[in-house]
Length: 404
Image (tube, rainbow, N blue to C red; front, side, top):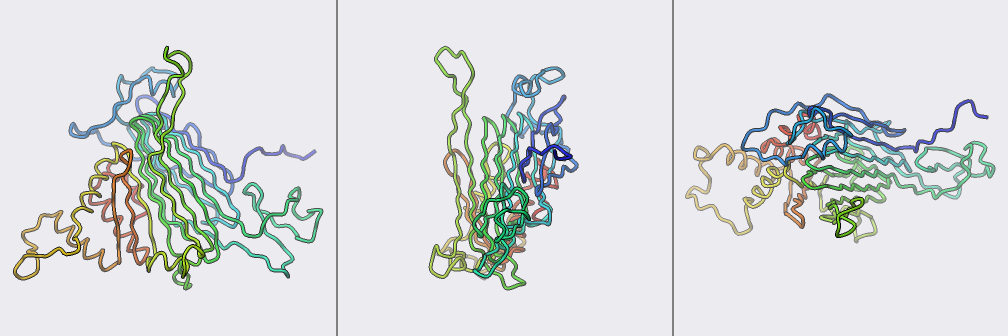
């Protein structure tokens, strides 16, 4: 008999459940994680009282009460919570070894908000490749790091790990978020930094109920430029999906349990593989050192969405001409926003920033961006978010840590 009971926890598994306590305070009812994942809650951001000009999706008392089990001490209609919690997603060692698997599930009850951040870029370490002379094999079973002797069939050095896996192991991160009515989440991580020879795959799935909002940044760098690494990974895969959740009654009488139907609103998938095109990954990115995606959906992110679409429509077009006699605009005649835009365009040109924005099916706004260097992309994205200012106002300064 072992001295301690065998744990039933899965390695790399994390769960976050955010509920609403009276009068309107979000609280972590569940916050659990297992190695190599770690979840660190931080001080919440206190929201100011909304002005009359700010439309907010109302949430009925019953919707909140269903998640609490009681409707006492709750107002008849809740428009938004008092505060926004902040949680950091951390991995031991600051990155993922070959075969590490992170599986994080988040559930936001109605009228709650959450900010997810990281404490730095997520490193993806090299995947070991065995040659015919290798005597040892590094492998992972169910996300647990282990080393066993390749010539020891009894598996003595690896305990109960007797299965032999392929030497090329992919590091994974899977995120699934369920966002209740009137709730919102902001995902603002630092970029993924895949080292040379690494393999990485991630999936982020957001399920949004009526009136829910989601904003997510997903970006990846070329690797360690100081070590002359430039898109030298074996493989990088990323997929982001937003699904709308619609309640459906099982029959015409409206009796019985309510079912639900899910509608895919957007799926954004990126695959980087050296064999995908002649010249490898570097030929695909065309000199960019970082590229990323920003997804925006819902009423909370509507102002930011309109801002990106407006700024994109005002970008200089091919064939455009400045009709000022001296060939330059008059700085004194520009408004504060126009001066900011003028300086931003100059910075974009210097940093090699390219970007586009579009609204797709279901009202989701997709922004794609790239830059020659990571800092150039960080500066551009931070400038856009701070100028529009709704992220800091609605989610707090912690939501902008990744662009400082």
